[in-house]
Image 1 (cartoon, rainbow, N blue to C red):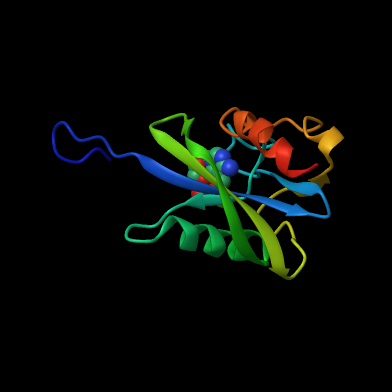
Image 2: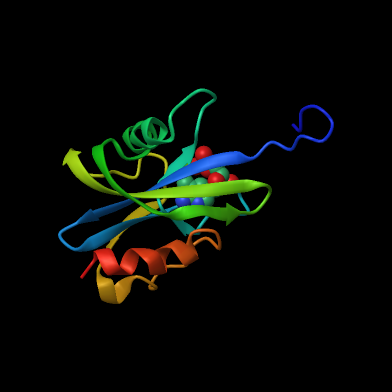
Amino acid sequence: MAGRKGLVAITIVVGAAIISDGRLLAAQRAEPPELAGGWEFPGGKVDPGERDEDALVRECAEELGVKIELGDRVGGDWPLALSGVLRVWTARLVEGEPKALEHIALRWLGADELYDVEWLPGDLPVVEAIASYLS
Ligand code: 9L3
Ligand code: MG
């Protein structure tokens, strides 16, 4: 895991705030057991040498079967447990309808429904930052 002495690997995770018709796509995680059932911005780990933005487009294709186009970066590095950070972009669908290929369920949340799901602790503060994009 950690490499040479004194260096700590930071895991970069990217997430997409996919917005369509004024609603935000939330995805319910299927794994690992300690996160299963929690809701997140779809996305995942950036591969070594991969651009963050490319990783996010790739992850949404893999997880949701859609092509997305990224918009704004939302905030900076949002802390995740276990030495990780979450980087979030707004996104819009350019091809396909999201399917829960790797998640338990998907939900489109309107501005008044943003907190109707149990967001993962790391994602929750980002939701507040997204609210302004839905009005
Ligand atoms: N994670 C947290 N919030 C998110 C995403 C996409 C991921 N919005 C956390 C869950 C995992 C780790 O980051 O611990 C890696 O995510 P993935 O590659 O398993 O999706
Ligand atoms: Mg993922």
